[in-house]
Each structure stands twice: as C-alpha cells, then as structure tokens.
Length: 450
Image (cartoon, rainbow, N blue to C red; front, side):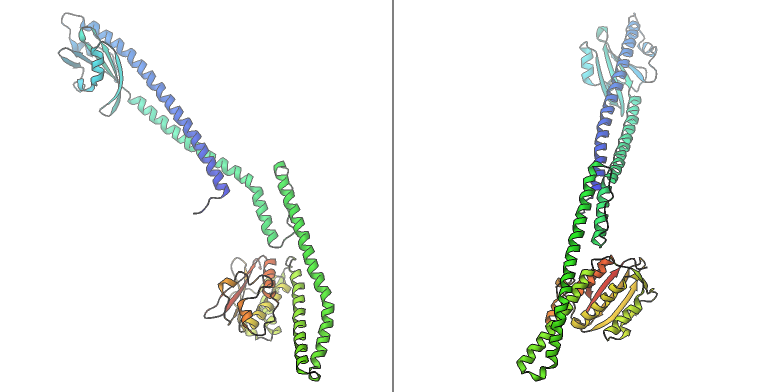
C-alpha cells in the first residue's frame, strides 16, 4: 500500500478539518433555520385557525346554519383548507378533503375539548393540522400546507452543502499552500544532500531570516563543513601514504628486477622466491597507483568536449585490443562533455576487467539517449556476475567470484570501484547485467554529456 507524502497528509488533514467544521456549522445552521421557520409557520397557522374557528362558531350559531356556506365564507387563501366535524359527519369546501386525513389521536384530543397541533404528510405533501374544539361537540380543523417551508429548507440545505464543500476546498488549498512553504526548507535540504552525494561539496544552504529555520541551515552547513574536512583529511592521508610508499616500492622493484634477471644464477627455490617477490612488488605498485587515483576521484569532474569514439579506440589500442570492438549506435553524436582523464580510466579499467575475468571484451558500445545521458557498455564472454555480487562488485577491495575462480588473479579490488567513483563524479552510475547468450555487460551512465 502506497503511503501518502507529508504534503498530501497535511493537505488532507486541512481539508477534513475544514469539512468537519463546515459540516457542523451547516447542520447547526440548518437545524436552527428549520426550527425557526416551522415555529413561525405554526404560530401563524394557529392564529389563523383560531380566527377562522371564531367565524365558523358565529356562522353555526343560527337556527338553520348552512355549513358549506359558512366554510366557503372563510378567507383561507390557497395554503389553508378548513374541515368541520359535526355529529352527522365531516364537512369541507371540496370533496377531496375528508376525515381520513385527520389522525385518530388528534380527533380524540379535540373531542375531549382540547386543541391540538400536529405535522403530517397528506398525499406526499407536508401539512400542519390544527384542531380546535367548538361548542356542542363540534370540531374545527384547518390543514395548512408546509410545502413552501420544505422547499425553502431544501434550498437552504443545498446552499449549506455547497458552502461546506467550498470551505473544505479552501481548507485543502490552505493546507497545500501552508505545506508548500513549510516543506520548502526540507526540499532545499534534500536537494543539497543530493548534490553533496553527487560530489559537489561546495553546496551549502542559504542563510534564512526565519529564527525557527536558522538552526537547521546552520547545523546542516556545519555538518557539510565537517564532512568535507574529514573527507579531505582521509583523502590527503591516503594520497600521502601512497606517495610515501612509492620511493621504497621503486627501490624494492629495482631490487626485484635485479633478482629476476639473475634467476639463472640461483637455485630453484631462490629463483621461485625472487619471482614471487617481483610479482608482489608489481601488484603493490598497482595498488598504490589505484589508491592515488581513488583519492583523486573525490574531486568534481572537470568536463570538456571529448570525442568519445576516438577515446574508446585509443583505450583499445593501449590494451592491444582491436579497434573494431568499439561500436557507436547509429545517429549518436560522439562529442561528449566529460572529464577526459576519468572516462579514459573507466574504459581502461573495464577493458582490463574483461580481459582478466571475462574471457576478453566482446564489444564496447557507445550510445546517447534523448535526455543527454551518455551510455558506455563493455561486454565480455565470461561466466557473468551472479546476482548476489552485482550490488557489491563496485565496492572497494571487493572481488567477484570470477576473480577468485581464475588462476593468476593479481587484481587489487579497486578497478571497478574506480569506475563507480568516476561515474559518480559525473552524476552517473555504474551497473552490471547479464549478456545474451553468455557473459556480462558493464554499463556506465553519464548524464548531461551534451
């Protein structure tokens, strides 16, 4: 399940909070408006019903009253309908209204001599019933339509719902705006951290006037300063140690060379020991050279315009390999903006790796995608790289299983680490995948080479 980001969660919280607040206010306002309208309509209907009941009482107080004429004399308008209950039955101005419309509870209440008010629905329409007892067991009822009140309440409900939705949208917009400004410092920190991870140790956070964020920027910049000093100290230590080792190593190499040339004058054991010493001194020299190169990789790449095709063919010639190994994808521009020394080292190390552990290089492919990312693929015919080794093979002093499985493996474990470091200095990366039908494909991606 995908987890929402901080900005999405804060925006959703603002929206839900605004919606709950708006819904609560809308419900309260709707209930208050509903009660006010109904109570006002009920008071008006009761007053009108008592007035009409008085008219009916006076009209019936004759020797031979005309009940229908009395009811028709009432000024009830279109919203009120009178209904009279006498001992001989129900009377109304129209035949559509009868005693069935009056609930039994209200009839019982009026017959007992007490007035009553009740809200019911008649033929699907909301109606207010007012029952008033008259003398002689006569009951007067007046039916007042509440349709206008119901329509008004519907309009009010729709308006309050629309307002609640708009308030929720405004809350979401406010939350997005607030998080956009509150998360901006975190975005700046993330961007700065990415640039530092890519090797740009000059990156710093700009000072802020916000007192709550001053400590963040100052602490981050102090951390970067400490990291730069520590890396520089480590790099300088490795470089100094490597340089200090060069003089005694040259002396040892010269002595080993003398011993090697005079192997014929020594017995077999001494000659073998001299050969081993010479081999280890040579390996030690390569290790020191790689350490010096590794110390230099901490510096940012110095980009310049380089013909990558020519550089790849020169690398093949330097390793006594055919230039035909270099293949440029059709339509690819070979003028790349890269660090010449670093890319040359990438090509040489990948070719050395293919020769030593991959059965020799099969192809060196160069391509450039539409986003300006240059891709260098070096393919070999070896046994490939197991999945468990692909994540660690570019670490320092790590050698894959193929290196241990072959005889004469005198590598330092720094060749592919240098490839990864040089790629990272360009803001890119180094990976390895399987090649069909067999072998491995070492890929280096270099962004922004155009």
